[in-house]
Image (tube, rainbow, N blue to C red):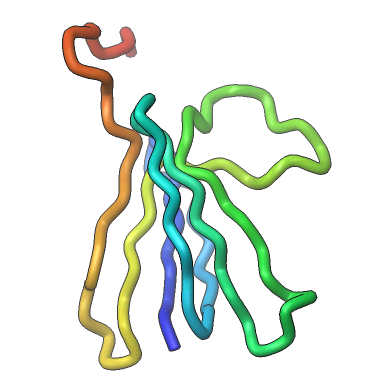
Length: 93
């Protein structure tokens, strides 16, 4: 069992989910897709680590700025965040 904590880029929005296992697909553009797998496959869901400042479109996976994955013992196993592309300036605040 894993606990995955999702945070918005500004740190104010947070969702905590549990999963039996998970899959992470990382893209070359610095984004990632995290699929949470449950005992019942119909309960699986996908959440993206992407630019969460963009308007959310209904029917698309939720977007967050970072995720912290913990194992059953409560130890952090991985931190996933939107990585800026090399050579690009960070976006203005």
